Length: 222
Image (tube, rainbow, N blue to C red):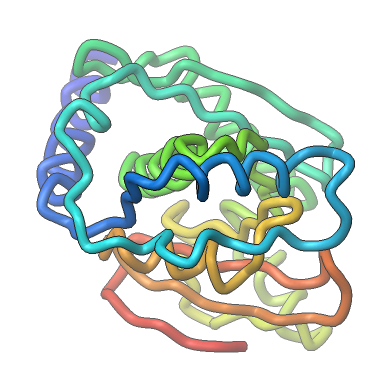
């Protein structure tokens, strides 16, 4: 348990160090934040129109990465949801981390593996960043870890899946946010520069998703 905790702490420290130097979107316009909050309300129809300057060239401040990290996720495939404090005072919270690994498990294959802390960092950073604009929503996890058999089944049924997918290593997730445009979500994740970002567009307001992983930096559309 001690060795795992040290590994997780080191991984999160290295990830955060890299993210400190990443150029991310910040805006000083309170009007845009107010508009985003209104658009994200339950009464707002359709997809949210993002603030025009949501990718401002300022740097995210250090305090953003030092505050406690609470990740709220929902898993449509299993009907589960959770809001977990998984990192605090520079340390991973083991119980919450284990719960997140379970939530990102292969639901069909019924198998749970350790999830890359860098992936959790990207998911949390995305959610915490848009919360600055009044958009407070759980991340929908469509796919996390996959067993080889599940991945092969997806390939055989025509679902986009790579034979050497990072999903097989617990280093990738397919996600979406209700009412948030996929281009905005994918663009934000790409700005973290922590790995690959895939844009998967499908008909309908909730038909597509964004793939994020901790592999080489690359972008594609599927």
